[in-house]
Length: 185
Image 1 (tube, one colour):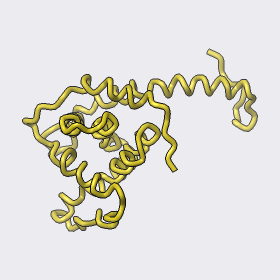
Image 2 (cartoon, helix red, strand yellow; image 1 turned 30 degrees about the vertical axis):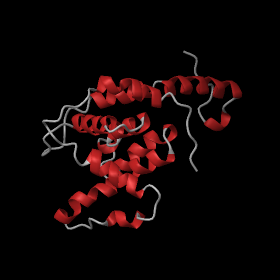
Image 3 (spheres, one colour; image 1 turned 135 degrees about the horizontal axis):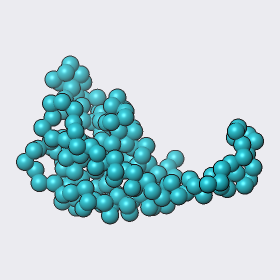
């Protein structure tokens, strides 16, 4: 396989960067494949939960799908906790960063903030502020994020819930990740 001529980027040529751009575009087109493979591996969980991370994600997405949410929101629901594995202290921001080029500003904001909004259910028990989300009460997506947490995320830890399969979500994931990227300000 042809390789670039440089060992320092500042010495690269147009030919080098055209070669890399071709490889990067090929790699980008396979993002959905990598995400689906990663999601299928989430069959373990943190100790204490009754279901796996994959099952939580499938339940969240199934609830969104059954409630008639857009394909974009269903995929975001499926991937909302994708950051748990690599960024447990900021998993929401990680998931939002993965989704950002392919989803609307609204969907990005909901996923980015859902972790903080979820503390509404837990903070009282752990000595925290359950109303930490109130600092966003005047934001245009505040109620949408509350609804995401209430309807989909916090209720999706049920070992008896019948979820759709990852394979059923695969076409949606492929569709979202084949979109021309949005450019948010």
